[in-house]
Amino acid sequence: VETLILKATTGLAPEAIGQARLRLGEGITGWAAQEGVALGVRDAASDPRFKYLPETRELDFKSLLAVPLVSQGRVIGAMNVQTTAFHDYGEDEVELLSLIGDLAAGALEKAELYDNMRRQIAELSTLAEVSRTITSPLYLDEMLGLIMEMAAQIMNAKICSLMLLDEAKGELVIRATQSLSQDYINKPPLQVGEGIAGLVAQEGVPITVLDVREEPRYHYADIARREGLCSLLSVPLTVRERIIGVFNCYTAEPHHFTREEIGLFSTLANQTALAIENANLVMNAAIVREMHHRVKNNLQTVAMLLRLQMSGGRQVSAQEVLHESINRILSIAAVHEVLSQKGFRLVDVKDVIERIVAA
Image (tube, rainbow, N blue to C red; front, side, top):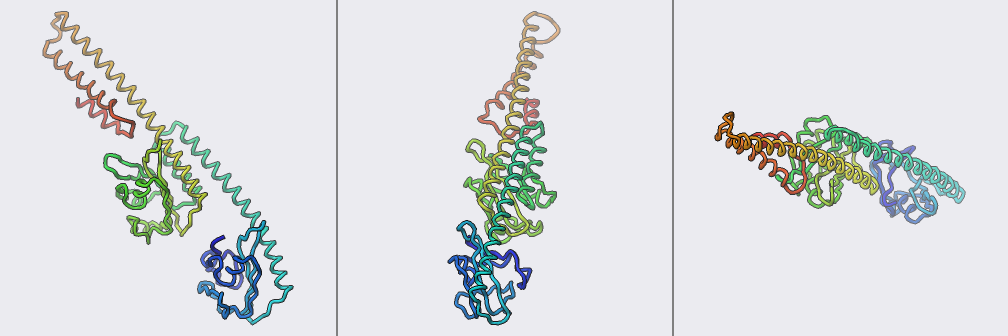
C-alpha cells in the first residue's frame, strides 16, 4: 500500500469517497498504517501528524483513533473513528477497534480474492473469444470491430481504438473503434513521434496518461473534452518485432492503470496484431493466386497469337499480333512488379487491379 483512498465512511462527506487520499505515513491514519500500530489522539488537529482533507469536512471532529488493517502480515489499509468531543481512548477501545479492523481486513481480503478470480475469468473468456474471432471466417474490418467491443468491455473503457501505421507516410490512422462518434473517428492522422500514440509507435513501449485533457504531449485535447475522455493507455501493435500500429484505451474518469491491466491490454494488442497479420497473409495468398492465373493466361494468349501468325493464316495481322503481345507482356510486367515488392503489407486491391488493367 502506497496511498490510502477513502472507500467507506459514516459521518464524513459522502462525496469524499474515492477522492480523499493520504500517502502512507501522511496524517494520523497514514502514520498508523505505515507503522502497523494503533494510534489514539485526544486533540487530533493539534497533533503534528494531522493532515486536513478539505473534501471530507472533518473539522468538526476532535479526537481520533486509527488502526491498521492487516491481512497475513501485510498492511492493506487503515480504519479510524472520530469523536465530536475530546476523548481519551482507553485500552479496551483500542483492542475493540483493532479486532474490528482484523475482521474487516479478512473480509476485504476474501472480497479481493473473489474479485480477482472473477476478473481473471472474464479476462480469460475475453482472450478466448478474441482467439475464436481471429480464426473465424470474418472480414478484417468486422473482426477488428468485434475485438474493439470486447476490449472496451473488459477494460471498462469509454473508447478503444486501433491505429495502423502507414509506413509510406509515416503516420498513424484510426482503422477501428467501437465508438460511434464521428468526431473521434475522423480525428486527423498522427505522425510517428507525434502525440502519445505517435510516441508509442516510435518507442515501442506502453504509455499511460492520467488525464489527456491536461497532458501537453497529447494532441486533440478539444476532442477529448467533447467526448468525455480522461485517462489513456496506449500500447504498440507488434508483428515479428515490427510495429504496425497502436492500440488505445480511454476511460471516462481518472484511472491509474495497473501492471495487470497494462499486461492484459498488451495481450489483446498482440492478438489483434496476429489477426491483422493473418488477414494480410490470406489477402496476399489470394493476390498471388490471381496473379499466377493472369500470368499463365497472358503467356498462353501470347503463344497462341504467335502460333497463328507463324501458321500464315489471314485471321490476324502482324500489327495486331504485335500490339496484343505487347499489352500482354506489359500486364505480366505489372504482375511481376507487385509480386517482387519486398515484404507483405496491407494493399488496396482496387489499386492493384487498376494498375494491371492500365498496363
